[in-house]
Length: 346
Image 1 (tube, rainbow, N blue to C red):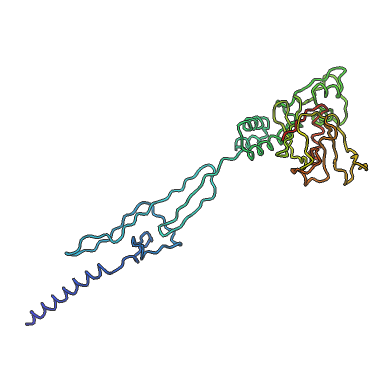
Image 2 (cartoon, helix red, strand yellow):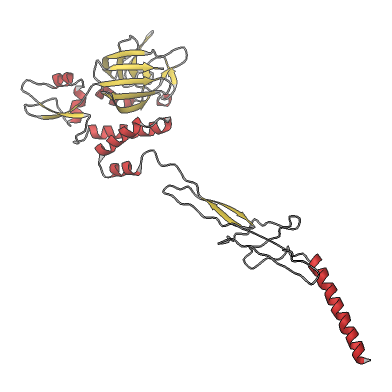
């Protein structure tokens, strides 16, 4: 009897164990289970949760299957996760990476920035003082560049280099070496080479206009031309057919349009007097709108001049003339001789 009762108890316990196992396998949620590295979550969207603070990144692809079965149940995967790994691409030019974090890990994306307009090679040449080589490469780059912002950057750099080269002892296409002959004077040399006496003196660091036979003089090589673009309010200087320098300017306001066409510089004045209708404004007066220099056009009443209002440069505000910052117009005054061609375009 004791053995029989013991068997009944054992049988009862086995049945109870069997029954509880089935109930557990069918009702117990495993969605709350996570491994130590937090790479697991449920495929059941109703019970799964995502965490914005989880930052682990699996090194490879995992497929995790949990199976609980007995003699009556078939194999059923409790959770199948396939996280993907993310690699960060690097390049010569990179912007700061962007990180996206989820319960599966952190994804790092690195975007490639465009190469700079002026290459590291050209910057390196400038740093080494190889200005002629840098200028040659920039001129070639300018011919192949069509976007306004990039052209502006290249033009500014060429302008800077050309002015350095002009007043240096370096040889480049924009300068020739002239040997003074008996009977020469600076005026005749300047006229022959379509330049100005002031520029020859500055290029050769001459305090006085005295020269002697067989003296070597640096002289600008080619005729200067001026283009004024009213749409951009930019003045571009060309040496022959080659771009040389750019300046910002102000041009005519609505109703007082700067005339378009091709003109010549017929007169040049330092510290000009402004003969305003009904008044004469002396040089240096804050009311003298002409600033420190005047380059008159072949079209009477129009020309290039300085300003007492530098904030106006880059705007359409003048009564028809081309206005420049005093420092720029003084530089232009030395570079440009009488007879220089000026083309004004819309």
